[in-house]
Image (cartoon, rainbow, N blue to C red; front, side, top):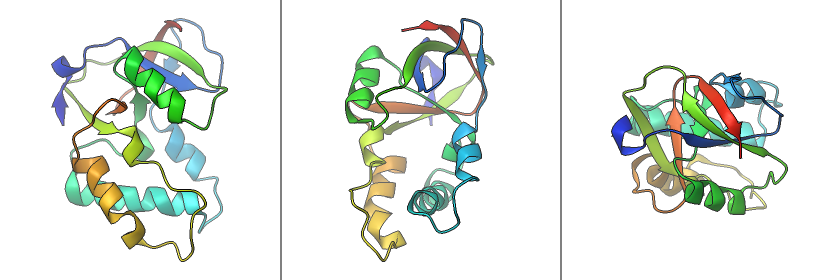
Length: 156
């Protein structure tokens, strides 16, 4: 966990809906979406592996299933956009609604999964990647995991 003073807002957030200034983005949207996945799907299994790794390595960090994701700087947002498969998302400048004391910072590239996924899909396939995500030193593609809601300042 990092003190919030290391990453002052405003931050950058990407989402596939149009929002107006003042809109509030609630945490946990990814977890909500994953509940709609078919049991045993690759994406669901992958996030379950990451969640088990978080509980073992960084239990105080926000869960990926119950947080909001942001990039701390425009450069991080640009790096994320270059690797993100969802090019249609709108970027927003956001700030935390509540006064956070800390955030977890990870390198987005340590989440990416090689395509195509190979069967059998096992925990061992992601042990090193999970370790790097939860305990690594993020470089130039940082994402912050924040456990609270965000307020939209403006579209970017």
